Image (cartoon, rainbow, N blue to C red):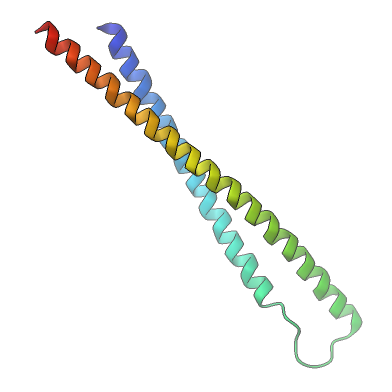
Length: 115
């Protein structure tokens, strides 16, 4: 019976670790999503202004827009990786919870058969 209790505890710890990892990834996904929104807003507001603009200002704006574009691409890639990791961790959490339930059921069955 002791080994079965230990198995249940180990599986419960694994489930809690998976839940904590999922929480960390969700926080990271939210931060990346917020950053993506801010970068997209900057890109949307960076269009050409009305009136004369000297060549240096135009070059600076073009360089800034190019940098924002690269940043937007990088954020989008990180967000995709984070979302994939979040799906993987959600699956891991579901398997860990199922393992805990199965171990608890086995323990309950053994206890019932010993009564």
